[in-house]
Length: 294
Image (tube, rainbow, N blue to C red):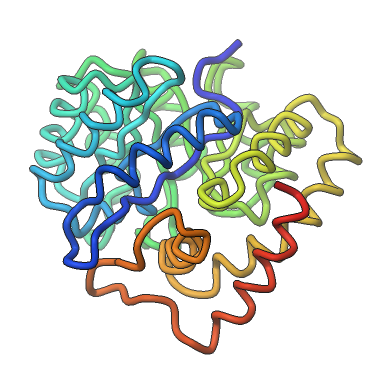
């Protein structure tokens, strides 16, 4: 069985009202995730507010998660940057902290060519020994790593998979045809993750798993075992919470949902702000429906 498969929570970074990291809430979230059947923890990704964490906070959070998880399930650290040098540094720091793999996002804002993407990821893997998972999210990066480019990078021994957040289900078959069977294909889009896995994907890096860990774990198991009818039924039941979490830029809504559940404080770093009042009723309604599933 592949190591980095199944339900993978894109963990929030809990914070106190003053914006400092809330370590106690982090520890409790990790225990909840593990006891609920989550297969992998992803720390300091987009959902973890990596753009507004200092390098010191980033490294401390990764080390803390590794320590608290204590080898019970794999830990992946977000180490991407639009600066190749910075991405190498973050990857090396994550490796020293003992993570099982790194998630490296397609460089954002500076819009590299496909050749630039190959050279960027090649340099990162050349300078760190841990496995790397590529992260394609064109809606945020304004750059799309194409399947042929992924196939070329898949030849590097420590590039082991990709998180695809395009929402394009056809990518699964295309990547499967170009890459080895061992290359890991992960959905990065909760709304389409069920069909992604039924099409041959290996799991989902999920935002919704922050608030519905048991349900996302079950969904991933059903879909990867090709229990299509049961998986689609559960996904349909989860759609209200998927939609509510997408009301505003991630992780605004999911952090507010965790606040409503008394799991974390209501704190998020600028330039993101807490969920607007107009969207709170829809989120509360979705959480009520979720209570019947979890």
